[in-house]
Image (tube, one colour):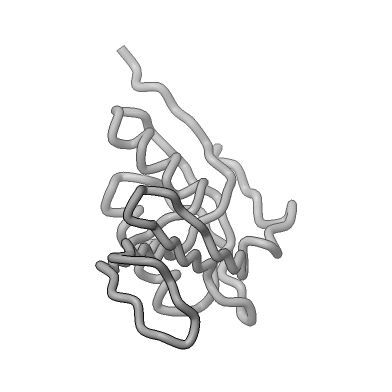
Length: 126
């Protein structure tokens, strides 16, 4: 039986998640547990599909920076065929996620190179 195949077109970036120990008070320090991981709706969807035995190609636009190289390496290691256009000017997407003690979250998003994705970046597998 053949494995299913999906092409995903979407955002890939870096997620910085800060689980806050208390309320944010501007001008003051707030303790937090901070993690950094590859993310983005397209990247997360492709990773989930790959974990469920689906062959996946992911199309996105990244910056020519360490965040883009890290995301590419992590997604490729997960078995995803990465067809990324590298933007020479814009950075890779970065999202800061603030998570309150009760689980409520706020996202601060900089779409970066994802915002410049254009039809010429989309080259479907043959």
